Image 1 (spheres, rainbow, N blue to C red):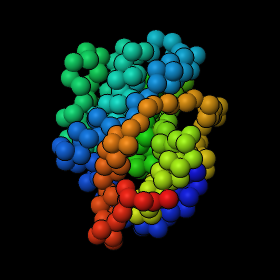
Image 2 (cartoon, rainbow, N blue to C red; image 1 turned 30 degrees about the vertical axis):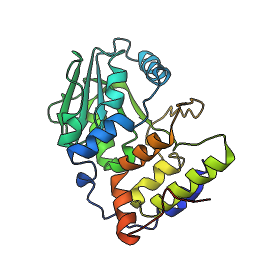
Image 3 (cartoon, rainbow, N blue to C red; image 1 turned 90 degrees about the vertical axis):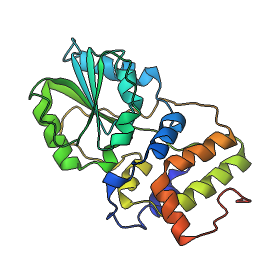
Image 4 (tube, rainbow, N blue to C red; image 1 turned 180 degrees about the vertical axis):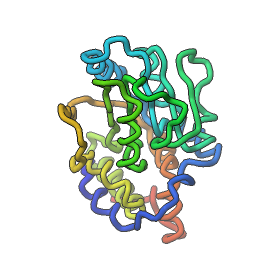
Amino acid sequence: MDTALLFQSSHLVPGNVDKSKMFLGMDHSKVYVEHRPRYTDELFKTIADYCKETNPDLNLAVDVGCGPGTSTIGLAKYFQKVIGIDISETQIACAPKDIPNCEFKVGYSDKLPFIEAGTVDLFCCGSSFHWLPQKETLAEADRVLKPGGTIAIFGYDFPCCDIPEVEACLQSIWTRIFSFAPKEAAPALERFRGLELPYPGLIRNDEMKLQMNYTVERNIEFLRVHTLSTCLHGEAHPTPRLFGRCC
């Protein structure tokens, strides 16, 4: 999908949306759990292998903006303990409770008083860094990370299709939706190409592929995950034809 169009559209809404209210509500959280794409094990293994170069024991990973634990669960295979942290109580309520080395907490990415300084091997954000207070979050990462610790920021593009007619329809739908996205979404839509981090040894990997079979119905449910944008679109266009003849 051509995310350049989405990136341009996402500047239209000011960044004054209360992000603490974006992922609330049990119904929304349940849809989020069921229909958000799952990261591949290749991603988690790549991150873990990188961490091992400086901290081979992989004692502790912290996953901020974890939602219902989508990436926390994948990291649990490689780290002795993983703590997932999210601002949304309902997202945390939907996180799994049967993984012994996973712990989930309601909290803020830039305030982690329950984590001791210099104890964390990995500090990561999966599809969440654009929503966080970035300067403050990185400062907290610096506090809790061990010497040689790793910061990993990752995400994925929006659904695309190799059938031109379907791809054109998807592009049309997402462009309409993201015309009402907060401007904070823009860096993610641009794949964080403009992101500057104050650390040496930055490695970027755009080669990994996340491939899934998506039905029309599942794509519609995935759209529901973006409740805030969809609601804003609905307020501006009470009867939009998002899923009608769009191309």
